[in-house]
Image (cartoon, rainbow, N blue to C red; front, side, top):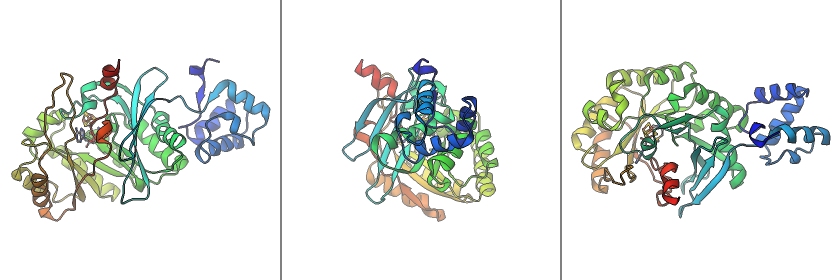
Length: 353
Ligand code: SAH
Ligand code: SF4
């Protein structure tokens, strides 16, 4: 069997592995053994599954492979952040990031949910790529497994903040959340899904009543600015969006996160800070300010600038006046373009070619 036609074991749920074994004429307990080799022992070859008979291992080798994500490139930042460029079986490229923080003992992985993104936010490198395709649940989960196998380190937190808009790929994302919990062993409270504000997706996710954190990329409290920088605002306006978020927090009982990108002269005025405080006052939320990370548009221009530290501080104080906790996001991996909004492999590749 061609490598491409083989069944990838990593990233699959126990139910999928059980179906796969049944098709091979193997009993369910074989699926549980394979599941444990993949998710507890992080094996990189079916040969390592030593409690399976040689005959079963030979059979598996013919029809299955551990993973179909190939590490095409790995960059390591001065701060230890690792950025993985994965090649998918169809040749498409996608990125994931492994981050460590000085004040936390655990590691966080940032995963992609799509190749490219259709939303087209004006400050985001992924947005410049346009939409290429959705990732399957297994392709999302396998990013974390590949990172663990490569680094030898256990990932404890996951953020869906890589390439793509998770809630425009909502069913596979929900499926992947279940596998992250049941198979990878990462509890819902250690997972954050970030969305640019896809109202039907927020309502769909609410039905699952998960204990994950939902983060909304709000970025502007006034409709004019938001329409300009997050174009889907034309489809789902601010009142509709804030209602869906309020309902989400009530249905799930979970505090949501409001993300706010600080673009100098565009989203960082004192008036906007006050509007942000008012807009979020009756929502059970924290606010996370993200100073803009430089990204070039396809013409090579830098469209925005990061506000000064003084302006960031002033904004933070005004935004917290309704009593919300407001934090400024610690950036990781800016030197290797691994920080928020800098994931844009197509351009990276084009520059190298
Ligand atoms: N599509 C989802 C998740 C991926 S982006 C979303 O938009 O929420 C993860 C976060 O990084 C989002 O809050 C996004 O707005 C932010 N971001 C994108 N480009 C950025 C940039 N250049 N500087 C800082 N943050 C950026
Ligand atoms: Fe897509 Fe999120 Fe980037 Fe906007 S910020 S273009 S939604 S990945």
